[in-house]
Length: 179
Image 1 (tube, rainbow, N blue to C red):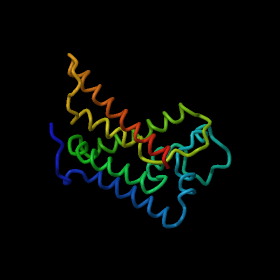
Image 2 (cartoon, rainbow, N blue to C red):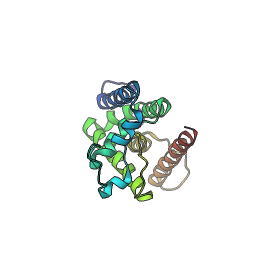
Image 3 (spheres, rainbow, N blue to C red):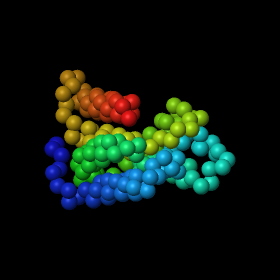
Image 4 (cartoon, helix red, strand yellow):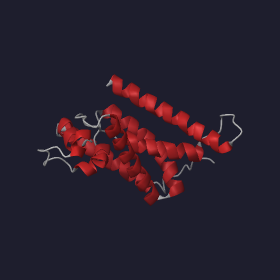
């Protein structure tokens, strides 16, 4: 299957990208990026109910608010590039509502993984990489070419998706260590 080339049915993808870019730009222009990261980033220790965080976004919403906060322009640009490239095709196939659900589930899955890795962590997790990872996974399942030679086509499809996921994680690590 070839990815669709039209933007007509990718309104949700464009809306998410637009809201994310505007949120980052507003925080950047106001010089409030560090405050935005603390206010809206996912901080694992807050899940346990830290006292004194009343002014912060509600902890149960921070996996979503964290998708609007990015560390810098390169982090934002890279995430939006991948989101637009893969999101357009995925949304065209599954529809806008299912795309929103996929994006939200990806954001919450990333927060759950962060919490599992460091439940007492105090550093905010920011960015849309978790949500975009879900979109990349869907993209690879729908449009990935079967280059792995195994007898079972379903297994080959999953292996292809895992290779793409490993590449995405590797790129995220490189960007994280670089900046």
